[in-house]
Length: 536
Image (cartoon, rainbow, N blue to C red):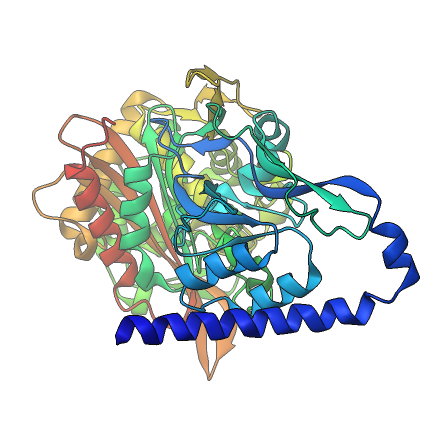
């Protein structure tokens, strides 16, 4: 009985479709132009699917085109429409009715395979997954299938080199209606191996960071691998679905903005730069008595919560993040050594990865701006006019982890041939320099490890793993319901079981309170990196 009922439903649907198509034909059957055109024939090309080069991670794991979708190419006849209607249980009835009335060949994505000779089915690559990895790096396409952002834009020419498509050619009359009984030709160039572009991201690390960072809400996380500063993961929050760009542009949260490339006040993380300058200039060693506040230019500057740290040296000042120590230290050194160290560590310089893909330069104040006592005091602990990007801070950390050698962060590994061979490419921006001595870098790592064990970074330090941490809270001067919004930082390095050293920068943007979120994210990422097998 159930089989008969189903048959009646399908028959009724077909009669409905036939009636709609018949009414459309009746409307035009008396038209003299239609009668004249009926004797003319031409070829109609139906574009079923298009693809372009693949974006791969550093292990040549595809980041795009790794999933498939079912697409039907249909010459709208009673037989073909009926086959789809039956296979999909009427799910696409309205669209099929319109297509049958129109009479022109069409392609549509459907959720089931149709086994019928009158319908051509194709299993084609889907450019982006539902939960697309690294959308801010991968980017997205415009309505014409060209790169509009991210690697899609920066490497558009290279990705276009490996384009392919599936097309079906039909014999039609002058109005585009398929000639009954005519042959159709399928041309498929998607089957050949496709090359593309490889980035330095590691899909496993990217997945780990994306899963670990959701609670930030708004912010960024960057992971680089020392010593060469390859970017292994880059997350900007909120993220977006590249399949739904039209909807996303309406969001007030600006999800398309790559926050890892945007400038923010670094807060106390900048103290690492001042500390490096102090060590390099032989000024470290003297102790300082912190009373919780210090006058500079007639203005009182305070340590966090006005807490007095007592007698501290450089090691203790980093551990406790003592503002007063660094105000005093930078005042004694002068601005120039700190500015020079900041420049050597990549701050104040933008970075281009390719066309339309670049990181903001941020802002380093000029020496004359720092001639005032107040401006210099703010600068000494990362406040005032100075701004840096999460990526720049990760590059700074990478130099500390790499024995003092600064390398510009790397994102594009090279091109991938049709045979799957990686062809390395020279970065657009490529700077390698000894920013500080190996001994200075070693001392900073020791101080950061101490800060992770018993200092401000202890809450985010995983147990049993070698990590160094420097935290920071940067005021923004923006208030919401009477509370000032701040940018919260958790930055450091971690060593995995194989001896690899990764640098991690975590930013929670514009929040009244952190609630421990940045520390928890840092800990999850560090724990994952220490145990993750990234060999393939």
